Length: 222
Length: 370
Image (cartoon, rainbow over all chains, first blue to last red; front, side):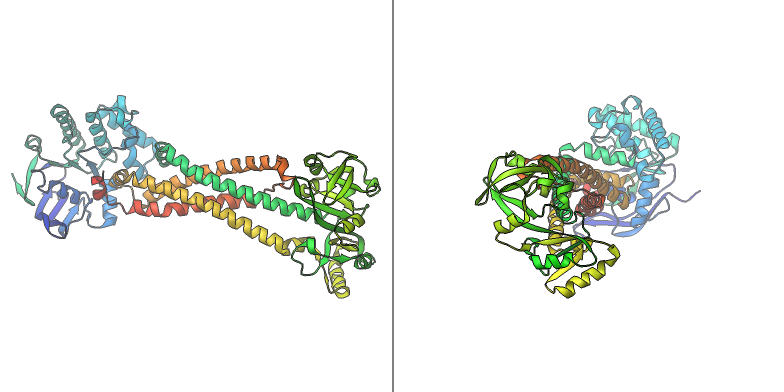
């Protein structure tokens, strides 16, 4: 068995000078190709854990390795974000005045991918996500479900090893949410991408390979 | 999408803000161009007045302004007799006034002065200069703004003169000035027997040093300078050069503040977006490049627009009768390069803090930012 893609040991994260303990010694391992749900109520610490994994925040204590890098180090965080990670947020966080294609191309710009490749990849992803007809539409002109699909396209642009999704269907209605989740699931299965997903919806968490219950800053395996 | 397209798109979607930045720089550049071109033009015109058919100038030592220089007739005669000298043309500068025109440059000169022969005579002939009693000869611009024609009597200062000729030269000061025979000018300005300068043409330019030394030795109160030396050392020119650059740079700095403000607003209103770029893998350097790229684009657009605006302003001033032809702007590549460089530097300096701020945006904090 190959080394886990994510290894976290005794991760601690506090806010407001230690007054609010969000993560209290979390341990976790995620194998490559897994789809893992961090499931828990609002405020349980699942988003914080996801942010630590993505190098958007740093733990106060503990050991963490993601894709072989240490997200506590700035240089490693940049490499991780640029080459190994894709993020999907609850609110899509797309750039409103850009088109779907332009939004999807942003990570490739950061990587310095040649133009032809960028455009071909954007078309390929748009086709996979059913957005070919929206490729040159601005974000404000498309629906919520389409925006979230565009955000998935952006996250997959640089073919990352690991996809971190924070409540990816949280802002969508149930039907659209299921559609987007199904799409995400199929895409990662076919591409072999590892997914760590934070959700408060048990229904979605149950569809993942593994469900980690985040409660009071600790993880319980279910 | 390319990186440049990202810069362009960012500017395009906040058109008004970007245009305000461009306007700030363009006004700064236009002001710089106008001030520098007018001052350099004025200096150039004065230099050309002095350098007509001459290589050296003889004038009173240590005067703050050539208008205050006094060279005596005896000194003129002696200089003319020097073996190195082919010709020595005295010139007396003065300021006269006419109704509605308080400042008009007056040139007192001898009838055989080269500038009269080289001028285009709109009315009259060079050979007749000084032959009309109470005659005055006008530069073409002066004739226009004084609305004077041949034979008309015009009031100059406390006297009355008859327009005896009108000449056109390529020099704005001369074109906007009036000419009197040297002796008439000396009487008019109560400076009988004096000239302001003597323009010297040497038999052999190589004998310049010898000539200079001879003048200094014979007349301790006079100095002889080669035209180029004079232009470099004349305090008035130096003050004008320095002042014009100082005012111009201040004008451009104001434009730079506009860019700083534009870029700050641009970064503050895009904190969340910049955080998304960081999350998508943009490095600090790429964010800096983005911010500086936007500032540079504004600066280049502003510089282009400012140069066009400045050139238009100069063309209008050049034709405006109120300026009596004294505005004869001079542009040169060094000046244009200096202006563009100043505009770019001020814009880049203006973008330093916004870029620093953008780089220090913490993605996780910024994504919570509304």
